[in-house]
Image 1 (cartoon, helix red, strand yellow):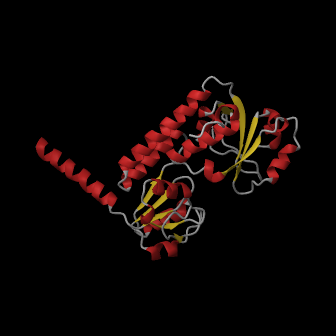
Image 2 (tube, helix red, strand yellow):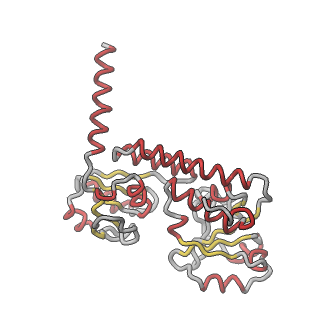
Length: 280
């Protein structure tokens, strides 16, 4: 009986791996998913992406936005796999796609670098690229550990993350950006708020007086926001000219590799005396 069970288990594993590797027409509903699929080496299998996704190397159809996917266009593409995110996509739209009978895989939300790696690996298993994912995760983990080793004994400066201007939004305790802070010897001034992206007031930011302000140029945040902050020279970050703008794709397209790149970028911005001479 034990021998039969072992054989059956083996067949199930082999069958699932073979099935995962058979996906040939994948639709991605978020930039982070699209980037993940590219990194896993299956660009040519991605046939549909949102208007905010990188186009990649092969031809792809635009199927709308994260919140408003074009269901009719998705149906016409006849995908054998559609991948969504739990947090970024319109839940009702994703459920409607599922009711149409499509194979929909939903990636979990990420609140840490560990979550990002686990989600990436789970996706890789789904599409038959587990070994590739493990290699990329191992490389990313080594890279962030190296940054951390160079910042471990530095004074921890405070950072205000601005991810929305009107109204003002920031990153709270549940956001993975706190791990950016961890690896670069900084601390999020709103890590005490147990939310992902809470709405806050400019007056409260001024009162908390961050050493560094990082503006993520998404939505309504543009270079004009730097000028807005320059009015408040009582804030340490403003007074010391440490208000920085970073592209949203460099910060909020979470894969293990892009997370590691973001840590390096932030380390060079925050600690130029240590990292600007490093080419790695």
